[in-house]
Length: 429
Image 1: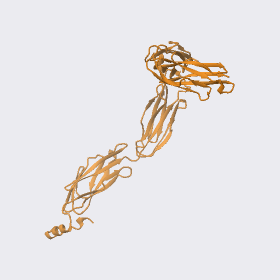
Image 2: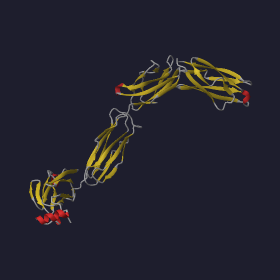
Image 3: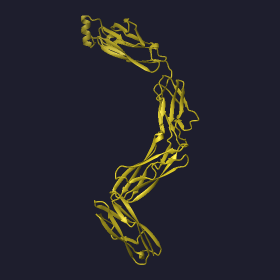
Image 4: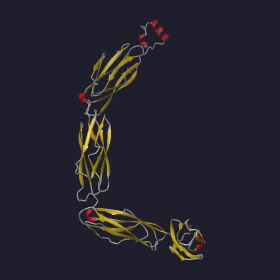
């Protein structure tokens, strides 16, 4: 029971008694509940205003929300404002939903202010229309261009009831796949991510893009997403060329495949990032036949290049079709060489020695190490590591007496700054 229900009439004696017993003399504002949710079947709700202190509480209830109306069991009302005063009784304020003023979908929120001579409080009010689903789709079109293969869009329930949806696309669009194809979104704000994939495998190139439509049908409306993709007129393999380590000339092949049904006039350009014109292609203006691949030969010439890594590219372009592919190219020119690349001792009965010449092609000293394969106890070297400034001769010795009669082969691996080199060694006893 509240303090106010114990307070007597404020006579002098009553006042003294109230002060002695702790009964508050000033009013105190109490409002409950402080949140109200309307919508669906809930078209009205009440909150209460109490004076939990003493004396008289003067209050004002005001709002400026077009979708609700307020009324009270006591007090006076003018527009969206209710005024009243209470001592020990309770004032009930009714909040009535004006559904016609609500937006078609979604949740609206607002405030009802209760002000008084004992402070203020706010009642938060939210409302929705009666339960109806609403289909919302995040995209209306997807263009995969020439290279993209995966995209996504989102289906959202923007309404207040369960959304059931299904999507479909023409069976003739064999290059298209969409997942998932059906789903249920239970309530407002629930979402599903739909993944769209395209495959260009086995699909012929043509001037116009391939196009189709993904249709979404639901109990909350329908929508569609337009999907398109293009097929590159040709493809180049491999998509990168690494000439590896060389101080001479190396060549690699490129294969150009026609994805369409007509010949394509190409322009092929070799470009280097540094080191001059060390990269070349055998045909700068070939015609890609309608059927069958076109072979190109790329050549790297490391002669005259300082030791180091080099990069470049080969651009294969169809100017009339505004399409091109660029193949990155790399080359490593070692600062360390070993000669010869093979040592053949032939058939021997006694130990024999052959020389290897190590050369530093640069100006900076090079640290090097050499490792003999573990299966070659018959093979030894005069040095297995060192610092090379210009040239150095290493003697390699084959000792046939350490093994049984037969033919033997092994490999010596030289490791140095930035790379490695190998020498093949053979012997017969």
